[in-house]
Image (cartoon, rainbow, N blue to C red; front, top):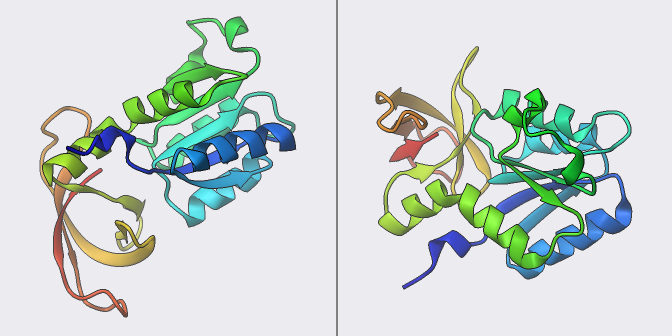
Length: 197
């Protein structure tokens, strides 16, 4: 039986230090993940606007936007996106710091492959559960308010317009429902899918 928690994920790594950024990206790629890397908070958020990811890892101390800023802004774009803060000063962050509400985990640098994989597995467990059970697809919604809704088709990173009908949240955290494509996107036939946000 496949361990779905260890399935490859689409990850975004943001770190202004080239050696840290390259090392973390390399380790994650060696673990089988697809990794986008950015040298600043603003560059990372620009990538996030273009490509949905399953999890975001960001450094804390960066010029311009800090890791806290990145986490807050990323959550504004994608409220359920798991965010991991990776920092050399994890031990100095107070447990009651208000900004902690925007991150799901804090990893201390240097962090090894096992620690990163454990956090990724834990924070993407809902996605893994859906994959293993054949349940609803988790798709990246790029626009829900203020215009037509579109989704990123799983496995293709192709954005398509859909008609979306949501059910009431069943677990208090996720919304689920049906998304129906209209056949207007070349290469994507009309289809209905169960979705989970």
